[in-house]
Image 1: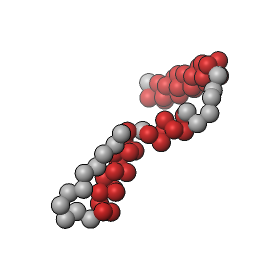
Image 2: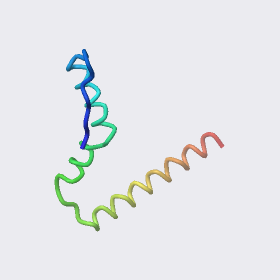
Image 3: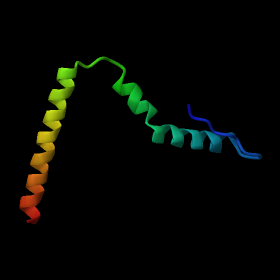
Length: 67
């Protein structure tokens, strides 16, 4: 759980901004979106393979360009 202590004479907007930054850094929204619906393990595995293939192809293109 994320906590932000409001300091003396600190505007609420500034404390809210600090809370939002901590919230983003913690990756809470990312986790909520990822867990919002069930994805079968086979689909997760297939997608990760596709990403790996794309990543390797990109590295090969970069390697050919810059030698």
